[in-house]
Length: 244
Image (cartoon, rainbow, N blue to C red; front, side, top):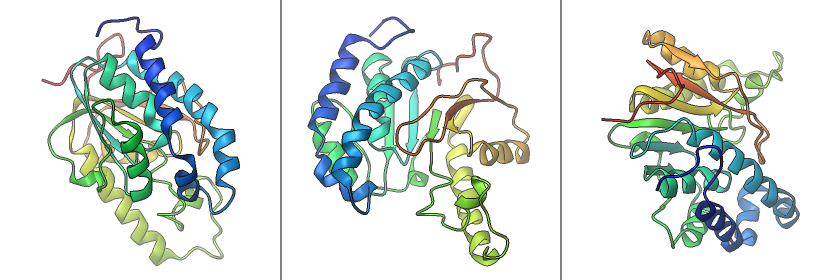
């Protein structure tokens, strides 16, 4: 499907609206909140659509048609970008999510399009990808309670448990290594400004050139700004070449 690179196609906009309208927000409430889930989604549903679509437009300018994207920890907020890639760029997307309840809700809502969320660890993904989406995963306070505060500059040296922190750091490094190992070069990484250092560390260790984009994009749920990192050689227009 060919179209304008500066905005989402009408069919994408329609599908995004329809799928957000089909989501079971009552079931999603406990996934994102300990209490007050209904109020949370009344406030966040609109921003997820609006801000997610803004990121989708930016990503649309950077990806070629027909490639493959690996999404780590993809959920409600990633719907606009996933739909855009599938519908407008004819790309293969593999979104992974470890939350069973959210995966069930998302797959029910997405039954009308070729988009399936996988209840599995993204480290199990096979093959090569030219785009890696890893947003608010490496600093997740639920999964990494000892590492996350340091990512946001809120670490307390009096309460930090170095053994638990070290264990979580090894897990994060292993996940980054596995996912980055599947990324073709040149490739593109979509992540948050707080997670850049993990991608940069991997690149330095493997002597892979990278360039962090100058522009950041706000997000609806966590609030961490999203950015793009070009890995390896990049075309002059900033777009990642198609995966061969």
